[in-house]
Length: 235
Image (tube, rainbow, N blue to C red; front, top):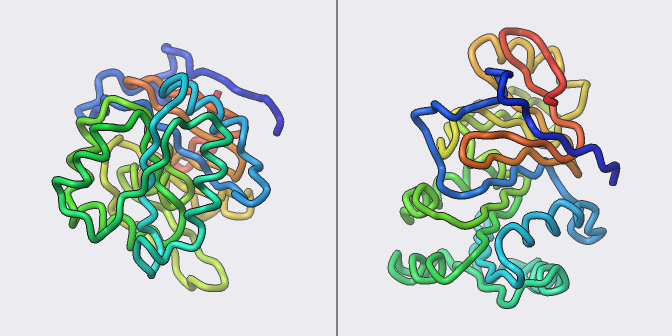
């Protein structure tokens, strides 16, 4: 992966959220997308894991698919990947768990990982189980991949494709006060510029990430800000 990692300057108001009314205690990694089989965002995950702990305890929320928890076929793949990244334990929060069981898993973790899949399904399930409340007071590291990244934002931007004839703006968990577009490609620029007249949108390609840390933003790879109908490189 091209190492083009940048930290937002404090003088750029569009890239700084210190005075935001929405704050997160966690350090958040918004990952635009990854081929987990190829592990093509390994370097980003390595940084996130090191930020969490020397040998982090990881809890995974695989709730973004139509099927639930124990039928999640990619469970072993993630377990092997995260163990290879240095995790001391990899636990999975099952949708059938009680709130108390989920809370215990979260409290015993250093890093929360939200998988990709169907954004609307993930947001609804996280809210139904009260995980959004846990995320707001979590003090570790949170990695959201694809749908997991979208869910953390103010609104989730899902642009048109062959499976979705219209662009969707789904209300996110609003852990931060900006909206997110994952799997960004320049072919969506006109649509994102139009939407950005109402919303501040960070567009994150696959194998790139936006990092939110106590109001400051930094970038791993190429990330773009769409705001007031304009597109600028986030650097």
